[in-house]
Length: 317
Image (cartoon, rainbow, N blue to C red; front, top):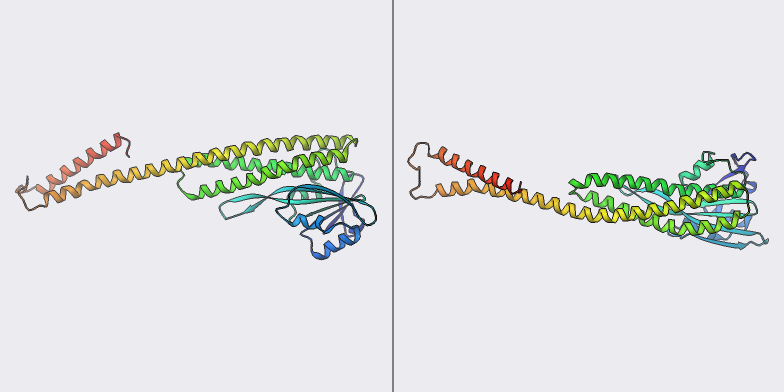
């Protein structure tokens, strides 16, 4: 559990007194931590535990605790890279619970994303530092949405590398990379499409009529969220097309390999035929000639040369 106070200048300072903190962040909370939040703030247990379920979907809820205070919940999905094997990685999405109650902000997730760490270290101010709870929430949502853009650009870079490597692709490794990218884009598309309307609706309600900084952040969040939607759609189409092209290229490369191997087999069969023909116990040309072996060898080499030339001309090599 980490607790922070927010100064008038928008600087986050960590504090040990989490009961009076402006922002409480919990990473993979223990049962004791959950009990503390439920006891002190009256937060429903599912508000906290749902953020630990990686299959949780974005949603917004509002309830009152025992003292009549409003508890607002916003669950959104954020992207995170995870390694599948040493050679490649894929991206997954995980839920982040954003809970507000009586001026206190509580965030809960299974693993703290890098953008939250930047905010905690005061490294994430877009234009002006956050000075209110609404600002903190907007900065979190802005950084979260921006992280989708960042990872989508990484995926586009991987796709470009695959397009270069695809011309000589014959290994399953490239298929595994495509599968990982396709899975990542499915997660991204679902998360972005679920996050976007929920974020737009919730922050419209929260900052309606608020200060200019909040309105500017709101406008920027909506813009980059729209951009993320367009980028994930384009990347998904590129992956689908690349998968089809990739299958065709691999089949064509394998056909070329088989064509070359077949041509080599044909050429290597000629000496066998010649040796078998001149090895029969019947009268044969040059059998009494002192250079019969060399003459036969030269004829064989000449026929092999002609065969290779013809196969090369027909593009079998």
